[in-house]
Length: 65
Image (cartoon, rainbow, N blue to C red; front, side, top):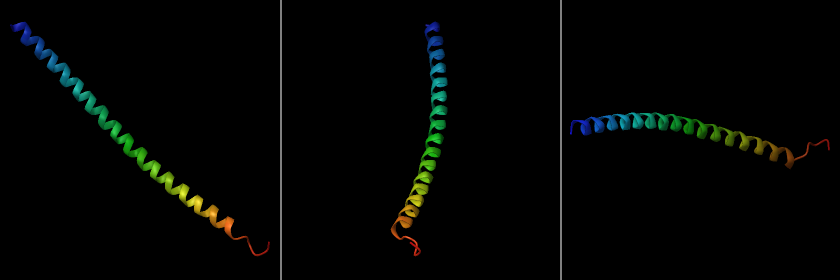
């Protein structure tokens, strides 16, 4: 009986350690995802700005043409 309790305590200890490690990994991944989403949003804004500039320059040729 004592061995079974000790075995269960050891298993619980390992599970708690695994859960803590998984939580840490999850938090790190969440931070990475947030940064990537921010970077993608910035890139989208830059693409829109470049796209608008390209369309404006194509529409009206300079008067000396």
